[in-house]
Image (cartoon, rainbow, N blue to C red):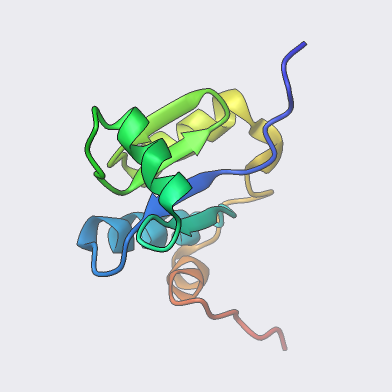
Length: 110
């Protein structure tokens, strides 16, 4: 029996522009994820090296058995749809809401 995927894990490091871009894209789509800084977590750095041919290339994303180095937000969403559809956001946010999510803000309802 296959275990149910509980989370999307995004391995990052400070100052990584590719990480910033991926985080923003995932937030725009409303996808929840767990971010792990490989500079603060040696075990996480080891996971990334095991996926990225011995390199600490980030962002590296894990969704259950699916793993990718520097994927697009669209690739991550596709993987979530295939491997953990229960983690997909209920609906896709509109452009304003997506931009607010990317900034970590919420639209106030009237």
